Length: 288
Image 1 (cartoon, rainbow, N blue to C red):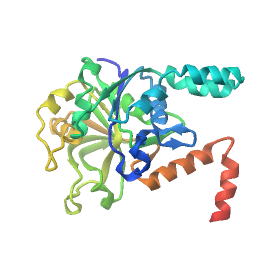
Image 2: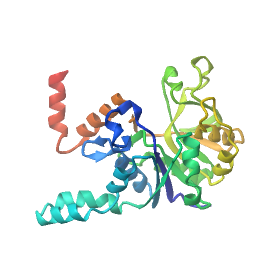
Image 3: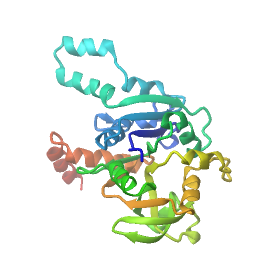
């Protein structure tokens, strides 16, 4: 069985809830302190042993590409002024992993975003990390936890948390037949069910490890009512064949698709920061 050495990170959306900022700048470049969210996600990937990353980008991809590419002018300026710490910071994204880009010309669903990665996967299993979800775990990165389950079972793995019943309608519902520790045997996945149809509060939250066979499933999907092809629907097909595990991962997830989630990420990462933490904590106390 192949080891998971590749990851696909779709970041092609318009970022509507962060307009007008996202009119010119991709939402994936929203900063958490001084580091773009997409780099935080990439660090999670690299720390999990993954060596190659494909970013599926949209029409505002130049900024993302620039972040992971060399800038001779900036390098020269920083070195000339002996700003070696800043030089190391800007060089790091260039060396994190082997990075490539593919453009999703038509925003017709998450499954179609993943389908673009077929040649990149080249017969191997791969991780999927959606750009709306930033994770924090100081021990084992969340995608690494999924990889561990995949290595033990050889089955598709989805990263999940139990959420409030009313929140399941924003994500998806994962039904299961049995559970061992924090690993579930998945039987059905329903994308954004109506509240009255929710049968499980276990929801997938933006982290997956899938076999190469997922592309055969995606190729035979039918679009949902809005004309989009959902990655969740492809996973549901596999789950009905007994080929999917879910792990209730350890760690904190920040919803970068919402303004409140973005603020929470900055506050909590700030509180963990050695330089900022104590002063930020004192400031928050004065507000509360």
